[in-house]
Image 1 (spheres, rainbow, N blue to C red):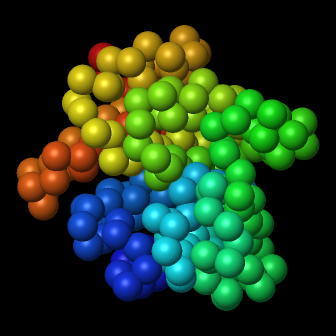
Image 2 (cartoon, rainbow, N blue to C red; image 1 turned 90 degrees about the vertical axis):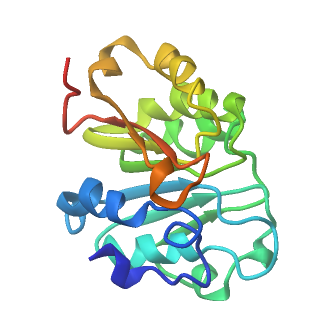
Image 3 (cartoon, rainbow, N blue to C red; image 1 turned 135 degrees about the vertical axis):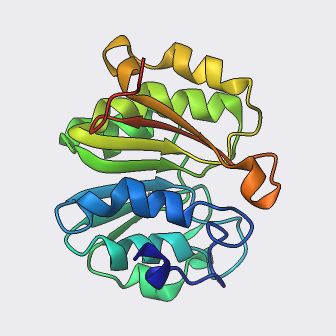
Amino acid sequence: MLSNFCDDRFTDKNTIHSYIDLYQTLFESKKESATHILEVGIGPGIRENGGSIMMWAEYFTNAQIHAADIIPIDHVRKELIDHPRIHLHTSNNAYNMNFFVNTFLNKGLKFDMLLDDGPHTLESMIDFVTMYSQLLKDDGILVIEDVQNIKWLDALRGVTPDALKPFVHVYDRREVKGRYDDIVFTINKGTQASP
């Protein structure tokens, strides 16, 4: 169970938000087969960031875990810095086209899971879909959590490449904990959305 790897002291995915049970369902089939995972957003900028990054490293036992954020490396938990399967891209804007191309696209990396937990702006979410959806494996899943407004979903669907539109799923979890932003947008190439 994913919840067994979630340290609530260092991530809000199971405390403030209600994502862990959803992610358990979405990612369970990839637990041992995933080879590349990326989360954009390591933490809010204070010390000891990266709880969800460590959770992914412990859950996806065979995957290389990539994490990108604008925060400096000294704001990241030491065990992440020293972890052999974690690749930290700190002091970088993951939504910058040059960073994206040089760090991921030109290297031919394909990802089992891409997760956006960055600044939670519509602009950054649109950039994430348009850029990072190119990196999905044939059965990969792209996730944007903390969608701030239900109306943003139309914009996200609108920038989704046509070939990926049938794989768009939305999970509205606002009623679980009464959070206005517990909306998750996904492109799950492993399952097609119902018509």
